[in-house]
Image (cartoon, rainbow, N blue to C red; front, top):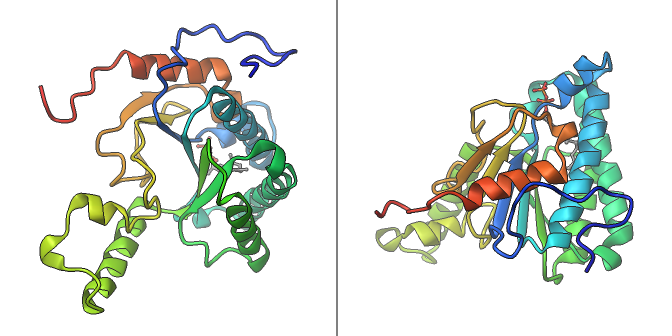
Length: 249
Ligand code: FPP
C-alpha cells in the first residue's frame, strides 16, 4: 500500500505509523473563520471543511487507523442560521452519496453517533443505507457525530438502561462502567485515545464527554479547512510522546 500517493508531498512530522492510536476523534473547528479571512461566506468554509474531512478520512484509512470519529453537527448547531444549517446538511448528503458510490472500493465502515430523528427523511435514509452497506467491512471505521451532544448521549444511554431494568433485562445493582458504555451511541467502539481540536479553542464542547475520560488532547491553531496530513502526523507524534498512566503511576 502506497503511503504517499503520487502528486502529494511527503509528510514531514515524525510520527511512528507502526504505533498508531487505535481511535482518533476530531472536533473540526474553524470553518467560519477560515471563510471570513478570505472574505467568503461561512458556507464556503464548510465546503472546504468537507474536502478536508475527505482527505483526512482517506488518509486515516490508508495508514491503517482503526477508528476515526468526527464532530460534524452538534445538538447545539441548530441555533445557526437556517441557510448555514442547510449548507452543512447539503454537504453531508453529497458526502454520503459519494461514500455509497465508492463503498466497494473504499470498504470503510460508517457509523453515526447522535439522534438522527430531526434530520430530513432523505438524509436519515442515506445514513441508514451507508451504515447498512458498510456494516460488515473490517478495517477503518469512520463515525460521524450528527445532531450529537455528549450529555444527550449519556441521557439516552441512561434511559435505555432504565428501560432494560424495568423490563428485567438489566440489574441496576450490578451496573459497571463498561456495561454502561455499551448503551452509548459509540456502543462497542473503544474510547478515543487522541482527541484533536482545530482552531485553537480549549473546549470539549459537549463532545464524547463519557468516552473522553482518558483521551490525550491535541489542540492546534490551524483552522479545519487547512488541517493537513502533516498536521495529523504532528498530532500523532505528540500523542506518542505522552506518558499515559490511566490514573496509575
Ligand atoms: C465548526 O466550524 C464546524 C462545523 C459546525 C461543521 C462541520 C462540518 C463540516 C466539516 C462539513 C460537513 C461534514 C462532513 C462530514 C461531510 P465553525 O463553523 O464553528 O467555525 P468558526 O468557529 O470559525 O465559526
